[in-house]
Image (cartoon, rainbow, N blue to C red; front, side, top):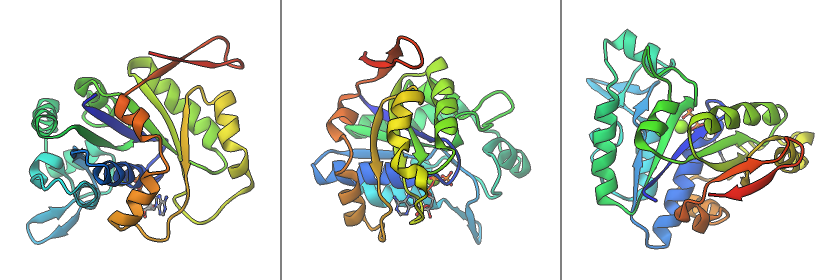
Length: 246
Ligand SMILES: Nc1ncnc2c1ncn2[C@@H]1O[C@H](COP(=O)(O)OP(=O)(O)OP(=O)(O)O)[C@@H](O)[C@H]1O
Ligand SMILES: [Mg+2]
């Protein structure tokens, strides 16, 4: 496999943290990891520059040293869906340019982790959503979801959107805040019953997110499976799902 597309059930669920944790843990194993955040909105303006904090964090975790223009070809200032932030900035997002940047990174590394913006159906251009990036790059999708009340519905909707047109790796539950609600104890099992996807693991809230702490988080994940690129689809009825490797 040459890459993974990391999406989420929402913005702020932990896509960057999960991607950075995977990157840091793979780097600790000696894997050459490339990263990409093709479009980042809500970038901080510093003079003439737009600082893409997700792309910077991914770069730091992967230690790949690639130029930011390849990792994040489209930094956008307004904290809006990319299509709207791009329109406001007079920028045209070109999926071919994203594909060329990805190809160059894929040629340099064993694996490239690509973080989407928002969720799968977040508008990217007037004709595309973020899901089209996974499709044009032909990448399997990893879904990050909050381990909190509401996640069963959000995850099942995202799984349906992913499996309609993409290969699905599975779902990663994450704790983006230290708060734990009563659903946290049953969400993993509930997702295996009703979520429609393989659960890859649950990441705890981490006090620190430096590369070493991220590597420790990432080591809790099924890295061999992620590297191997097995994807799963589900057969049988919605209440009797057995994952089938493909
Ligand atoms: N496991 C975790 N431990 C500690 N903090 C976390 C964890 N997961 C996420 N966070 C924090 O939660 C916030 C949102 O996480 P993150 O930026 O990874 O979300 P995202 O899905 O990438 O958001 P966006 O849609 O903006 O890209 C950040 O402040 C991040 O540091
Ligand atoms: Mg992010």
